Length: 107
Length: 116
Image (cartoon, rainbow over all chains, first blue to last red; front, side, top):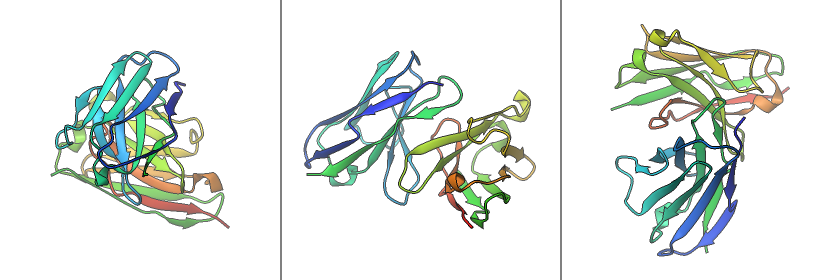
């Protein structure tokens, strides 16, 4: 199974900050990497697919990069509604696996 | 508009069974590969399994912790995805979501609690 390791597991930031979350795969997954945002009591929402493609309707302050084993999710100029938990997911092979999540909290 | 609506969750005793349903609308369900994802209370996301379309032989794949106990099926005439859950364990307690394989569409989830 491909293991996905996210860092950090939690992060405190302020409105207007730029933050980066990283995700590392235990083997190469090409660009088969998605990023999700989840708020309490809600289903996850797809932000980025294929490592760097912005899902329709997602604000352009979200961006993704990387390929192979190392990936990043960047949020430029945090908005209040961005405080949530973020997950990476590899869809290169089954079983599909998720990172453990990064909780973004208000400083 | 794509909609996925799960139902069938509830409280069940260890060793018991439950069948979850996911009613799909707004897209050509018969062509879609579908997945189930679960989330234990306060924990992260866990992929449960996937079913391919009929044209791809409705092939299924499962995560190791559920293989042999949980079974994914579909009824394209009803635009409905199923998750048959047998021999349930306390560690199966979670919110269960159905999703399209792309991850673009998720249901609201249905809660399964396994407890004596």
